[in-house]
Length: 108
Image 1 (cartoon, rainbow, N blue to C red):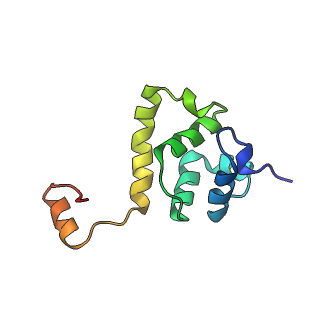
Image 2 (image 1 turned 30 degrees about the vertical axis):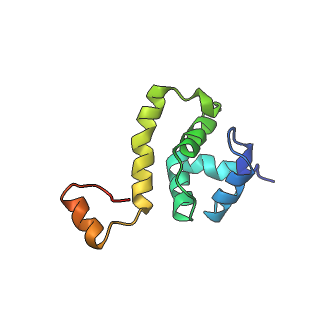
Image 3 (image 1 turned 45 degrees about the vertical axis):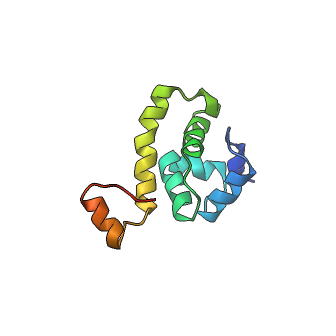
C-alpha cells in the first residue's frame, strides 16, 4: 500500500483530502509531480491558495519543517506561488478589467 500524502512532513489529513480532489492520492505521486505541479493541480481542483501551505509543501518535500523556511527562501518562493495562483485566477471582467488596464489595481 502506498504512503498517504500526509506522510510527507508538514502535511496532515486535510492535505490528504485536498490532493485527493486533484487525483493525487499518495506521497509517491506528489513527490513525482513536485511541489509546483502538485500545488497547481490542487488549486485547479478547488483548493484555496495559501502561501504558507505552499511553502510548507516545498519544505516538506525537502524533509524540513515548515518553520525552517528562511526569509530569503520565502522571498524566492513567493513569485512561484503567485504564478501558480495566477494560473487559476479568473481574469477581471467589465469595469474591473478597465481599472486593471489603467493601473488602478483591483477594487475590494
